[in-house]
Image (cartoon, rainbow, N blue to C red; front, side):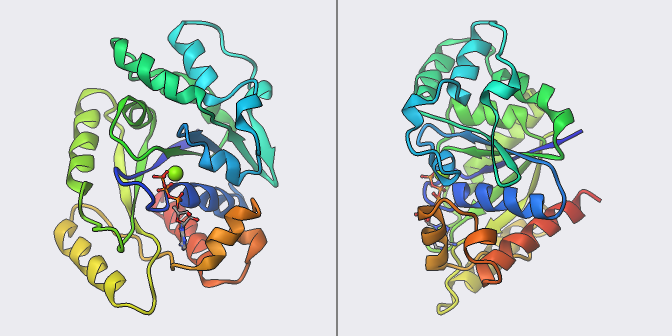
Amino acid sequence: MGKIILVGATKGGVGKSVTSYNLAYSLASLGKKVLAVDFDSQANLTTCFGVENTAVMPVTIGHLMMAQMEDEKLPDPGEYIMSRNGVDFIPSSMVLSAVEAKLRLEMGAERMLAGILDPLRERYDFIIIDTCPALGALTINALAAADGVVITVNPQLLAMMGLQDFLKTIKKIKSRINPKLEVEGILLTMCEARTNLCKVISEQVTETFEGQIRIFDSKIPNTVKVGESVYYSEPLLEYAPGTKACKAYLDFGKELIAYEG
Ligand SMILES: Nc1ncnc2c1ncn2[C@@H]1O[C@H](COP(=O)(O)OP(=O)(O)OP(=O)(O)O)[C@@H](O)[C@H]1O
Ligand SMILES: [Mg+2]
């Protein structure tokens, strides 16, 4: 049965989408069957997978959420699961922002995404959800669907801010809606090798969460290769294999798998 992992943070621009994308390919290269789910109306992950115009997509995660909320039968997975170089994905579009507004008006609608993803577990080893940078109804739905959370932290961006709020929300979701939810760990992204900041923040995070949350040994370096690979809609494993960033994402995938025992 596949494990559902959410990549999240309450901050924007901390490498959630880039991590979801490259983690999916790392796990696939390690022999795992992976589905990546874009759960952000910005659709950055969908763009990473090379979809240029998300507005014309007939079935996106937003459409599935709408159908789920209306108790309609979902289309066949073949109609909405796309695939690129060995990784499957469910695209997103602006439709998801309408879902967010609707979710806020519905009662007990926290498990809509879980209802969509649970039947897909048997097809995959890992389902990776990329989320938006807010603690709104969408993120709550994603937390209700997930087994594990990877929290991305960018040392450049006042890393610790918002982290405690996010952890508090995770705790609440765990006790109220989704008892199996666990924090997998904190992944430091965009670590600048030339400055000491990554080391300092890493120590600060470790000190704060020692014994509670693990900090992944793999730290993602800050490199232009990432932006370039996104521009060309290629994962680092294709665009820049052998680079430090590529190796870091591969090691991160290994750490995540090893953690499963
Ligand atoms: N390791 C890295 N080195 C350099 N640039 C990076 C790295 N990781 C991500 N970026 C760049 O930083 C920007 C933000 O990354 P990304 O979109 O993954 O963040 P996000 O957390 O998903 O943002 P949002 O909150 O808007 O969804 C992008 O332009 C991306 O190309
Ligand atoms: Mg993103």
